[in-house]
View 1 (cartoon, rainbow, N blue to C red):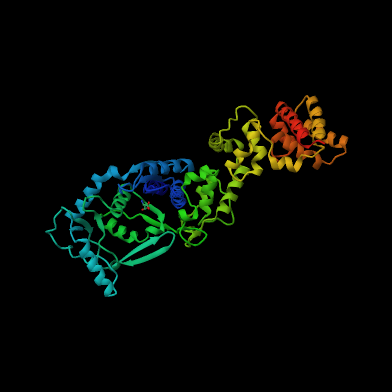
View 2 (cartoon, helix red, strand yellow):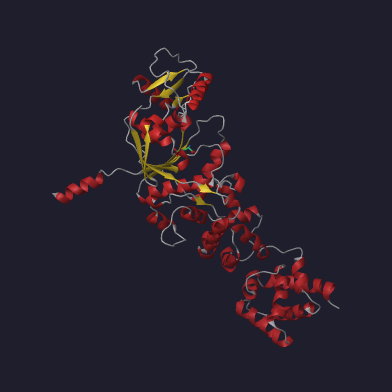
Length: 481
Ligand code: GLU
């Protein structure tokens, strides 16, 4: 009988539910992306549910552009959600219903204190060296008109609220510290603290993982959950990300929306990897596959101290990904940059071969796309610095010698190309340093490329010969005696 009983118990295990609820008042920024990642990982590692909720109750500051940036960012990062996007503006009736319920049950009240009155109260409290907060004047009034009044929560007056925070440990706040927070504005629009609790309750949230800039809201929200008879979620408050000056990361530090990282040439998995490590570690491992992230991440092990954003480290992580991901996968991410830089790769070598030849030399996909143009398009001019450095009076002769030999090659491959270069060096009694760089500039237009045999093989015989002819002409006109 016993094994059957334990099987039954397993069946009723509650489903883990987490969420990411950005307010669409700007881009999806790095800090938001990191909390989204942590919430997503927690849901995925527990076979739970991850919900995307758009907290768009601030009608004046919302924008469709920002909603799009959030959806694009989540999509680009591969943070897929099981429900959503759920828009809070679609749930106003529900919030009204809950506010009415709290009023009916005497857990909330209407307040029509004017801003001047509230200011005066706070002024007085400050003068008495007390913490400024609402004095509860309307708590027991029954004659407050609906028109023009706010709805306030009747926060308990006594006792402690304890947050069992998964990152920060237990935090105790006395109810005397807490205000009777406003649940609805005079125009009836519900406030963040009300909507977030109603949603987390209705959506069966088991874990609220968010930035610790919200920690002051949490005891108020806990009281509200309790007033509604709802099951409390577990809380995990993640420390902020700081800029290198120790201040909270912001636009001033050049911090930008997540999609800018795509534009700058980062691989989404590399950005996720960097964000994961920013504030969490597993031994001294730096690179984590998606599966490893899901299996190894522990919310309890997130650092209590804030972390500092380090662009150099992010670039290093990106480089590791460029060097090691399968070329096919890089190609899918590279496509956006090829389109952006107007480079059509249909007329040239397989992009995966070019990626393999170039991946060691690029820190970003943007750079990679920029570096590979000469495989697909002829260049108008040789790079001036490159010719200045590598074209000499002897160059036309050397290039012509190579050109004659290349023309005779029947099987164009790295070995035959290598053999031609070696033969020319021997024949002209020149070191590789006198031949290679000039050949590279002649065929690629620039001074840097992978090894010559690989580069020329990818460029192909026909294009190589054409370009060398042009180079001989150019060098003859400019450098020959
Ligand atoms: N909309 C809030 C924000 O963007 C969500 C806070 C929360 O996770 O409860 O900061």
